[in-house]
Length: 223
Length: 111
Image 1: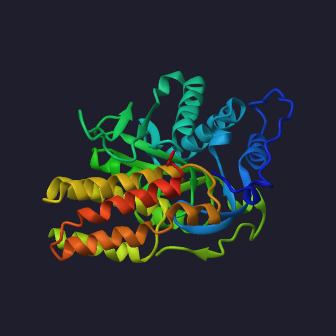
Image 2: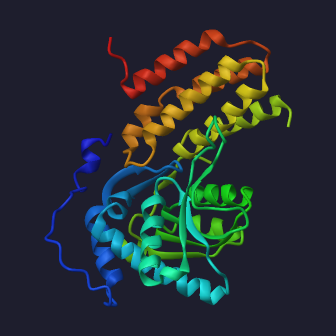
């Protein structure tokens, strides 16, 4: 779907995998390197919000990579534990809007199980719209009314997809404890979500990935 | 909310241009209108047009040029249909050109 001129800097590279030291404090550094290598493309792009940007983060290339998924899981679970403890909440399940959240939620859920099988953290996925037939379900997987959940998303720009997930979860009787995102593009999404009373914990910001002022949007195409 | 208010809101949103998020929102609203209003076929087709276009834009890097190609003419034609509905016209005749534009933009024609 990409025009050639916009993909010329989007190069997939294949590096030799190294064993992951899960005790290392540089898990974030390694995940950042994978993100930059696999997911960051340069060009002139129209984002889902209609805003234009000179970079695009295709986070699925990272979150669906087994090695990166292990890192996302370890780091994400660490953040879930820290944030839940700090806010005094018990987390029942983790999920978000398909498909950006799906690999991330499962990675964190698996990491939670490996770290603490008794935690019984579950995962779920939120459809973009309710099934038009059958039970008209919007949330699939392990979610029950009354549960406290962590919402995850791979990339936030305006926060629209995260807000859609939060709305669906609350409509279904869930409580959102906080939000964890892999990449915050620092374009107002975090503020929009926090305005609704939900804390946002990013693993990386645009500045972390690209440096100060990189990828500043040049134009907002729509209101 | 009265149906005409819903159409006015859609027209207002369309005037700001298209985006994937807007198309997804329009698709949900057209689906709802198809169930609420008499012009079921019109809203059903509008919902499908928006859903197909949103699907083409979703989850991948779309260059500015490609976005313009994919969405060319769509907002104006949907707005035209909605204005007809506001005036009490069925707008059926304007659906085929809209779908032709969608198919052309998406490169779906095999003839």
